[in-house]
Image (cartoon, rainbow, N blue to C red):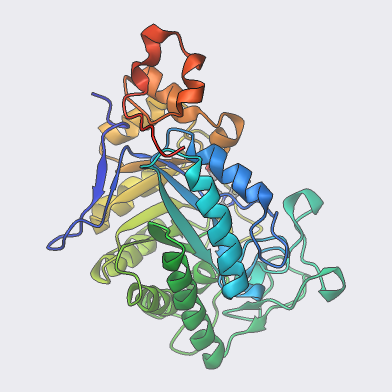
Length: 376
Ligand SMILES: Cc1cc2nc3c(=O)[nH]c(=O)nc-3n(C[C@H](O)[C@H](O)[C@H](O)COP(=O)(O)O)c2cc1C
């Protein structure tokens, strides 16, 4: 029996199980830069509907700003007031109506920190000013992401309080619109990663310096969200900055241990994003060793991600015990039915809309084992 198509239950020690996934395949969060003033659009409806019909058991919605200046670009999704809550809730409810019953939805809550106020990738990704719809970003220290760029404003204690509250409020809104799980974005050089990394955090107060101090703010944010989130709450990390004197996998493993003590449900292991000098080896499975290390050190349920493109690769990561779940991003854009192909290759089953069953000869339709009909 395929490992990838085994169910997974988030079941913290000593507590009642929080969520069951039909399989271990997850759609990684992907910004779409398609919101206006943070509001979800028809593009989100289409994108989510497509990916909810991918064979993955859970879709993680893109980095969603907990404040307007916490967005990466002016086109990024937001969840900071009743208008953005309504727009997101409406698009999500419509997408879910067009998807199999059991597919779960997680949302990645995020603050972009010093990487906020950027142009979309296809417009160059550079920092933009107020004349182009941008704003002055904030960060742990007044150090720009790229030398020569405008410096972010160093956050004061009131800013820290505001951001903690913004994360907790966004989590309440997310739960109100019916998401099944929440992921905090502490990766890719955005605010929570910036606090963890000595590259972006050179504070001299209780929030900078030692690893204990650098972990303090991300752990406070986690705690603030945990207090309002009874269900699954995970964290995405960058396990390495890929530069000298940057954040190391061993430090991130310590952070993961701390998260486990704070009742974290999973850790999602990515890397990079904080330094323009990063040297990332773009090769298959390049982040799996980080997932393995962090899983072993923290015993947290672990998602591996990053250039996993073949079903056999996903299967062997799980069979080796290097991670508990597998997330894919770009492969799902290229082939939104990646999960169906994987089920056919590995002998698994997926829920699939009956209108599409004829994509396979009747002899091969056994992959649609978990079909549910009735609500459409
Ligand atoms: C279009 C696009 C948007 C992305 N947006 C996000 C995001 O919102 N949050 C995040 O943590 N990572 C984001 N990522 C990174 C992916 O989640 C993933 O970690 C990365 O692409 C590596 O996985 P892959 O090799 O399967 O694509 C994005 C990647 C792509 C291609």
